[in-house]
View (tube, rainbow, N blue to C red):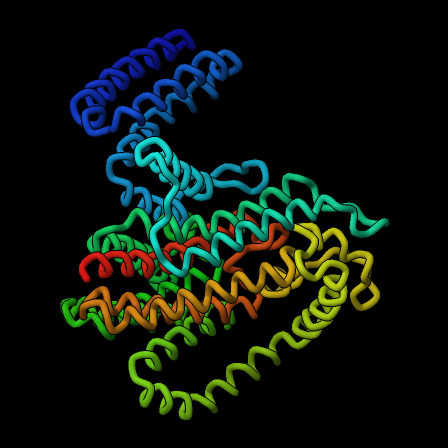
Length: 479
């Protein structure tokens, strides 16, 4: 077949596809889209076709544009049913591959940015006001974004004469992480207004997580799941922590769930811990934070049972902690040295730090064990201080307190079943998330560690914590 024949087939396929999409848009999508959204889409399409398209020089780029047409149609449909976007975000974060994009951006991060943009645009154009739902959890997040932005500005100051700051794209990527994490929380809280959507979000995540874990122990399935699931999501402790926390709480406390499904969720918890501890070579970030989550869920439900478990768990905890330190004695020693050096560095600007990503480029001025090399803190909290100072860490601690207090109040206000089990799971996930920050894991990834690729997993924590604020608004309206 000649190139001309292939082009004719391509154009014929394009005409059929365009006809199908046009009929779909006219018959179902467009009648449900608000007029303001249609206007914005038309203006964007005209600008794209008149400015960007003429600059495209290859058929590959034109084919890529053709492939994006169904994606654009799906985006228009999300305007009418926004919670679907969050479910799509979970799926994209876990299994959708992405080409190498500048600054470490990937499709999951870009989809999150698009969803936040559509949400803000809807408030500006339709509601004609930027107004967030009333909740005490909002203020520390807005403060964190403000402080991170100030730190980004401060980061342009040459703090050390003999070292340059990080490249601007790395600084912008670091700033995006401090913006997108609160954005994921607020997006979930504002888009999910019915309990069924929170249920769908949870079950989709647990189903995908169960498929991934099953791939570790099922012959033949692992070769599929190994290629399907994205390393940036599954190598992050947030994936394992929230998988265990949500599955355990639903299995234990959701009395409205069929006993068979509760048993299956309990099996998922056991299998996940087995994979993390045994098959994954004792990966500490994979089993320690989830075990902390389980302990918190039980303790919050019953302080007596929690106290008994704490006493009985002293010896196992001592064994696990000593084993964790013994297997990586040199690693923990170098991390301790890194912590001391970074705390010494931060004395230069303790309030706002050095700005996103910058301290990594300053570390060669402070040799570690005689080596003048670049290194990161390997500790979430020191990392926050080094980038955004004491003020940034204060905002994170403030948020953790507020969302924890919210969950503590909700556990007795929401009805039994899924909602109450979700609250317990979110409280366990919150503490597990905070515990993971002490290890070599991140709920606010560092650009020069797991970066925006690892944000695929980190965004899970912020999305499911946003579900607490969503429940707060649901049952506040009912009250």
